[in-house]
Amino acid sequence: MYFYELHEGDAEVFSDVLLGRDEEMEPEEFFDLVQSIRRRIQEDFAEDTLIESIAEELERDHGFVFISDDRLSAAVNVSKDEDDNFLADLEAGLEVDDEFRTTYADLDLDRGSRLN
Image (cartoon, rainbow, N blue to C red; front, side, top):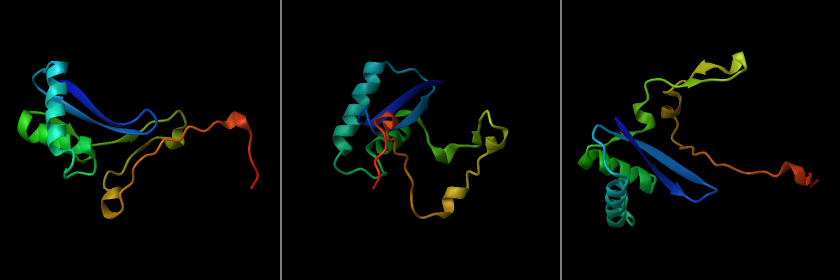
C-alpha cells in the first residue's frame, strides 16, 4: 500500500487528507493528476473542502482510497496521564448537525498579558 497526502491552506492554518493506493504512482504523476482535477472542479466542488472533493474523485475514478474519519474502526486517545487514555466514541459527532474544524493559534506567552 502506498500513501499520498493533500494539503490545503497556508503555513498558519491548513487541513489535509490521506489517500492510499495499492499501486505506486510517481510523485510528479500524482501532482499532475491532482492539478487536473483541481482545475476542473475548483469553482464548483461538492465536499466541504477542495481537497476532500479531489480525494473523492481520486477514489471514484483513479484507484485511491480516501482515508476519511468515516472509515475509522477505532480511535484511541493516548497520554502519559492514565486518566486521559480512552477509546474515543466515533458515533458521538454523528448526532450533531454542526460541524467542527480545528484551528491552530500560535500564542506568544512571553509578551506578557494585557488586562481589559
